[in-house]
Image (cartoon, rainbow, N blue to C red; front, side, top):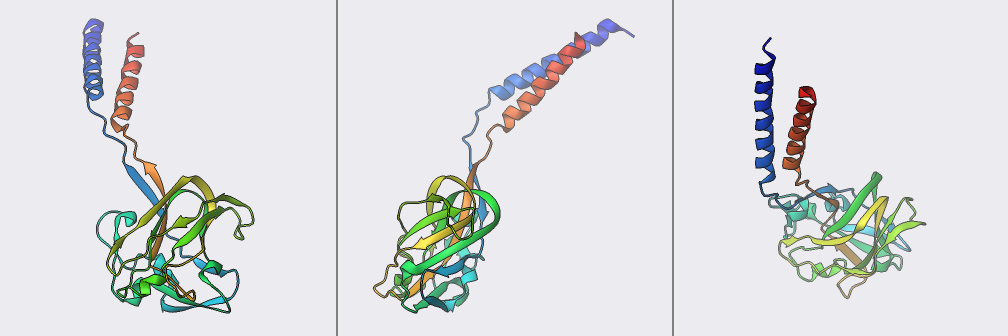
Length: 234
């Protein structure tokens, strides 16, 4: 075996490795992109007092994607207007209840990381009906289903009133929270009539930065291979 010839061949490989890594290092690294992990559990309604009766659509419509249209992920889509009950949820309150007695509770099935709430307010074709959309609320996270020991409670948040046209989501951001349960604790609606409430769609998400280090990982792999080659040569 010609040892000298073999070493020269391996040395050439090392030069290829070095030039490849150098070329990779000279490439521009693009900014990280947000790739949200999106959750859409169907809420349950709990009442502080009184009761509710769905009078248009169904509660599941707030989580099943009905009415969402357009490209991109769910957070980027519009919710259609119109009057198709398959796309909305509206309820009448009774027994002395007001919107402040309404809680929308969500169970993610296990603890998850979250930092975004997306809401599409009630946006049926009738601008008077949009008054029943949620206005002020607090967002609460907990590891127990009765929310007796919350891990996070927001300040009062305000959701813009829906329009009788397609609308985009209103996104509320908060520090990354790990919890199993979430609650939208409603304080008020937009309308003068306190006996009704409505919502079009809701999503929770964690905005996960897309690694911009794909090229870096490739470079590291090549550097590792080069290091291994060097050890072999030595």
